Length: 93
Ligand SMILES: [Zn+2]
Image (tube, rainbow, N blue to C red):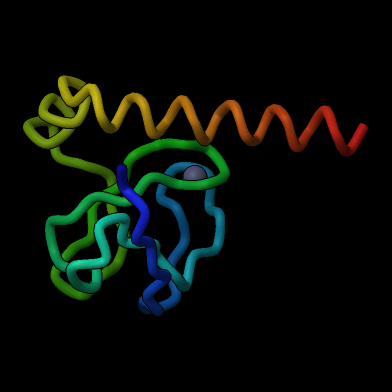
């Protein structure tokens, strides 16, 4: 069971897909702050971005995108975000 989560401050960012403003990232296992090459799943659009060397978010390279697409855990996390966003939308209507 993954029970430790912590938010880390990161440089001001915008999701490279939807433009959502991001200045914090949650590191699920709480081992360390996000670093270059780590992925970030947007809480608005659920797309997967990658932290560059200055912790700015960028779209994955083709090789990274292939690796991300093959990762069932990332897919499960995206589905959770999509489901929660849909529930919030229903609740607010
Ligand atoms: Zn986004």
